[in-house]
Image (cartoon, rainbow, N blue to C red; front, side, top):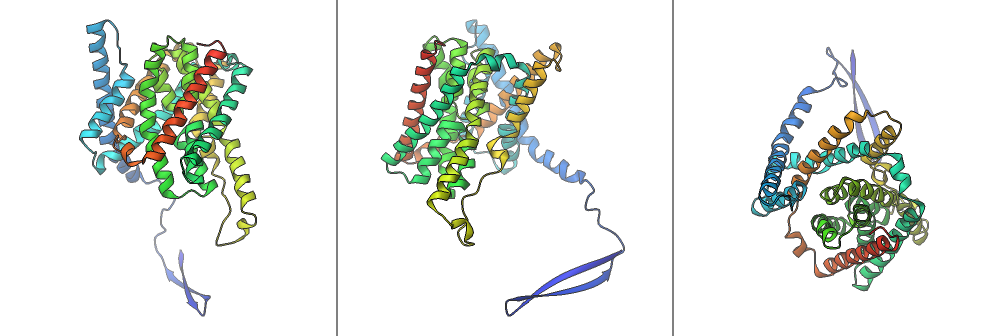
Length: 382
């Protein structure tokens, strides 16, 4: 086999290519799978995953203690896992060797749980949501974006920062922020601040909504709609609604999916607006125009997987005997990922976010919750 080397020299601004050949006796196995790489990756994630699983087991144990003492669990294992993880994170910052497994549990494990949840939802449940509710969800998202953006500008936030907060609060939190950022040309500092704050506030919402449901005596279906309209991320809807009932989890996930599907039209609209404000910018090499994010950001893989399992359940592909074990696995994975979510939350981030960002995000979320609650009662679901 002959191996060729390629060297490029630059002279007077022009490239000069120099080809040289040398003998090679052994070809490189470039396409061969590297088992050591996979092994190192798994070994690197093991400590963090084991820690999250241990916290999940402790949460299960505490739930059992509650049941023995009071006859019922006032705090479900899902909530306890978040509290235990957050408490541990406040006292101890995980070193680098723990972080890959924690990040893996907080993201991928939770996404797998959402996919498995699709096996418990049928097409009849989706159709049962009804056209009035679907139209109302779209209107709530549009109103929430407009209100949040206006509030941000009223508090003196820059346009890009106000747009990030508006889309994050109104659609799907960090995913919306990540998708919108390249379209509007947001600075890295703005993106980091918005994501950090929504991470903390998202946990507060997950913990607070079940308490609100009990205090307001909401029906499982009504609470599912409320959670789907207010919680930031699809997996967090599962964490907020599962302590109430499986019906709340199913309805909340469906409502949240409609909100997530709004991300595509919103990103496209923002792209067109930015292009209209800077005509010709896309043609200049030093100032690229707005860029659409990849489809994987506008429609994450786990949503596609969720819909595929919904279709499989509706077509009778999934045996009835598999539904209960699948639901139990999804619940366990969710508890593990909630422990990871708690380990990734630093409550001191709120203090560093600044009063204006804190005020805008909090007031926007309260407004969204108020509109969502009014919608639930207006549709007779409460």
